[in-house]
Image (cartoon, rainbow, N blue to C red; front, side):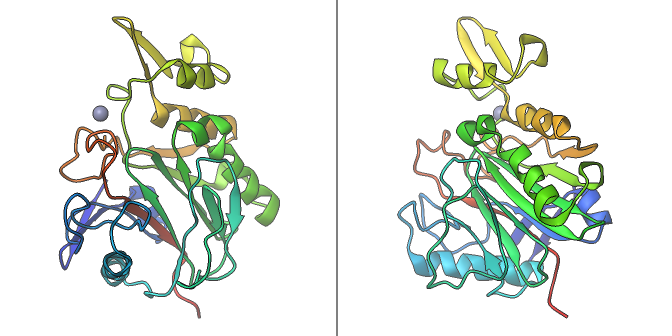
Length: 262
Ligand SMILES: [Zn+2]
């Protein structure tokens, strides 16, 4: 996972997406303008930070990645498995659609999704020239948001799963994600003990959301899946973590785009 730095902004990229020439990144929390508890590159207005700060932070990311400041398409993430297709950027005065995955074949659209422990996923089909992003908390993960994203790429753009590159980004790891019976039940509806998505230890239970999403993608037929292996809770100094910060965290961004128009 190469790390990049420009101005004060730092981000990780995937080797496979970088080799494919696709602009994308998982943006660390540094270099933004938001005060604590959202310090500093917070991209969500839903957590108490000001709209002005969030817009400035989005602009800083756009400038660092060299994408247009008005190219973003984002959604109101609701822990669903709903996928929407972006035909053009979302204007700042336009309402968000409720969804947890975005697909597009449009140059000039930069998919932006927000995270703080939930699992970010970025996708690229180099044959059909389609990109996608998905957000998998435990609910979205076990509702199948990963496979729904692949299904949307297939139905809307005729993508073949074996062509699609996928990257699973910084998120809470299995060692840190202790869960209750509701989450275990959701996991066990899809996975057997031998899948190792659920782990029991000293009367505690843990769920591996990074692995669960990888397995959903493998079941959907993907052959090229990269894991960043970064835990947001262990590396809370670099990434927002809902659990580490007792629910008062900012949200970091994952961005992917086919590039500029023309
Ligand atoms: Zn961890």
